[in-house]
Figure 1 (cartoon, helix red, strand yellow):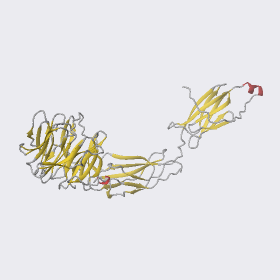
Figure 2 (cartoon, rainbow, N blue to C red; figure 1 turned 60 degrees about the vertical axis):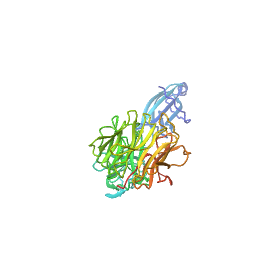
Figure 3 (cartoon, rainbow, N blue to C red; figure 1 turned 120 degrees about the horizontal axis):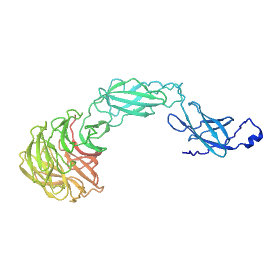
Length: 504
C-alpha cells in the first residue's frame, strides 16, 4: 500500500554530478518521502536528521517522524537517518522523474554503553516495623541514573509472607506511594521492595523489608458493598473510616446478609453454591469458613431472604419456601420448626436475642406481596399477628434485647410493582405491650425519592441502623439513628444490608 506523507519543509540541494551541463539538463527529478520510527516500539522519532548521498541533501523529521525531500535528481541514493541515542541507519532508494519514492527507516537504540540505575534504599515502613496502617505510605530514596538522560520509573512489590500472591503497583514516577484502600489486610505480615527501570536495562531491585499491619480495629458495623458483579461483606467502626474498615469475605464470591453471632466472634452470611443459596459462617479474618446448611435457603428473591441466630448463638433459623427450619450452628440437628400454606413463602425471620420462645416471621405470596408479619414460639405455635395480608412490600424484621419492640419496614404507598420496586417504604416500631405500631421514619414520603429498609436494633437497643436508598436502586447508604428515628447520620456510603457488630 502506498504511504501518504505530509510535506514538512523546503530543502536546498547541492548535488554534484560527474557530467556536463547538457547531461544535467537532461535529468529529471522526483520526491522522496519517508518516516523514521523506533524499531523497538514502532513510535515515530522526531528531529532525526536525514542525509541523502551522493550529493549533500539534508532535513529533519517532524513530530510524526515524517520528512519530505523535493526536487531530487533521478538516480540511486543512500538515505541516512541519525538521532542521538540511536544507531545510524542507511536504506537505499531510487528516484524516478516526476514520481514519489517512499522509505521507512527503523532506528535501533544505542544501548551498548547505557548503564543501569542504582538500587534504591527503602525508608518507610522500616524493616520489621509493627502496627503499620493498612493505608500504608511507602517511601524510598531516588535512584541515581549514571547516564543522566534516562527516564526512571519505579515498581512497588508487596508480598504476603508465606503466600504466593503479590500486590504490584507499576509506573510510579515519585518516591512515595500510598496503598490502595482494602489492598492490605489487617494483622498480616508483608514484605516490600522497589524495582527501578530506565527503560533500557533490566529492572534493578532493592533489598526487601518486612512489616506487619495493625491488628483488627474495633468493629461495630457490618455491611455489604457491591463490587463488579459480587456482593462483598465489610466491617468498620461507627465512623465508617477507611482505615478502620476491612473486607470480611472473598471479593471473588458473592456473599451477603451478614449476621453477627451474639455469643462469639463468628459471622454468618448467605452465599451461592452453584444454583443454591446456603448459610456460611467464618471468623472476621476469613478463617474457619464453614457451610452450615445442606437444605438451601430459598424463598422470594435471594436478596430479600433473611435468617437469624438464636439468642445464645448456638442455632440458626432460616426459610425454605413455605417452611422454617432450625439448625445447629455446626450444621447438625436440622429440624422443621414451622410451615405455612404451599402458595406462600416465608422470606424473613428474626429470633429474639433475649429468649428462645419469641420468633418473628414474614410471610408473602409468590410475588413478594400480600405480606403478613407474625410471631411464633420455638415450638412453632403462632402467638401474635402484626400485619396481615397487606398491600405493598414489608419486611426488615428485628426484635430488641428487651422483647418490648419489633422493628419492621413497610411501603405505605401500597404499590405492588412487578419488579418489586418500593416507592415509600418507612420504618415502624411495634410495641408488644401496646400492640400498636409507631412511625420511626420521617412523616410523608421522603422528598429525595429514598426509602428506609433493613432496620436493626443496636445490641443495647439505644440506636437503629438501616439502609436509606433510592426507590429505584438496590444500593444506598448506611444510616444510624436514635431508637426513635431521630438524629439520623450516614456512616457508610454506597452500601446495604447492615448489622451491628461487637468489637473483635
